[in-house]
Amino acid sequence: MLRIDRICIWLFMFGFIFMLPGIKHIKFVDELISFSFLAVAVVDCIANRNWRYYKLLWIISGILTFYLLYSLIFLKYNTTVAVVSDWIIQLKPFIPFTVMYAVRPRFTYIDKAIFKALTVIASLFIVIVLIAGHEAIHATVLHIAYTGIGLFISAMIYLYCSISDKGHVARHDLIVTIIMLTAGLGCTRSKYYGIYIIAVFFLFIFRPGAHRGLPVKYIITGTATAIGVIIVAWHKLDYYFLTGGTGVYDLSIIDSYARPVLYITGYKILLDHVPFGTGLASFGSFMSGEHYSEVYHEYGINTVYGLSEHMPDFICDTFYPSLAQFGIIGVILFIAFWLYIYSKIKYYLCIDGNTYRYHYAIGVSIIAFILIESIAATTFVQTTGMQCMLLLGMLCGEAQRIWESDPHRAQNISFSWKRLRITSWT
Image (cartoon, rainbow, N blue to C red; front, side, top):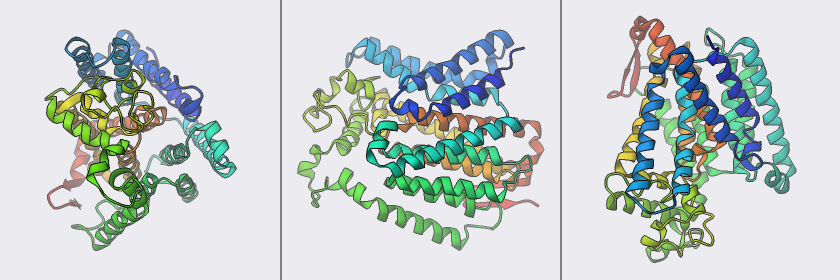
């Protein structure tokens, strides 16, 4: 029998090693890793007859293939090459997650030691690049935002590899984790400030089952977090979504700002093209700018700075507007996917919130990271997003394995959404 689990671990490490070079210098690495995982799944199905374990992969692939055919047969917004290329881009983050979730590989002690060393090396490299300045950043990772992303991912993987079988993390490993996360603040991105606060809260403050109801300190912390994020991010919110840096909110000139135009037009597309949207490579995606889509002409935004045919630089500047390609049905499926992931991460609380506290915290932090990043970036479909999906796949697979091995442990903790509390039966 083929050791599919070991291949997945090696691919995970290989992808991390090339995560930063893949941003600028080896741009095909994310496709290579993603379709290597797909090959692993096919081989596992043929050699080990494990078709049933990959049900989620086949469902998601089937949905996106439907959109591929829908875009090619019924719509004419872009070329065949662009549509097929966008199909590959949209599919690639889901493949690693579903394969890792199906295979459920487990790190050995040596795997953890190697991966921790790799994250430390990557973090030191990023810090050196940050200190070196703009030219070094541009030459290595293209944009300063990627330094924060790289440090966040390194911190999450490092912490995951530091968790003992009993759920404990050594004090020095917690210190290294917080140093990595804090160093990421050097990226100076408002998004990262919010991500940092959320991660610190779940990793170092949140205690499952420790209190009844919603503790006052949680309410105060949550309120302070929201206010803090708005304060530090206000300049960017104002620039990208309100005044464009003019200091005046004026709806008559809103069409001159690329990002709000993408969101507004995406909303219009959802209403105009019910239920399946304008199809692949039509709006808000990289291929819709690389092979300029007719949708931009149809909605009259082809003259907006950054969205024009001659300068489409800002078309792929945010992820959520691209969901308009998939219509209302696609938006619902996207939300359902993340709810599905969280339902698996929540297993850790249901099984034993104290033992698996860090597993839960890492999972929630990564979900928050991707959802926040998607407001003003396309990290989800990039090589950095793939690392997040790989770790989420491992977390969900491990939670599923533990749940299935001893389902009676689920009675130890109950989770109540209506009362917003976690209560213990013990």
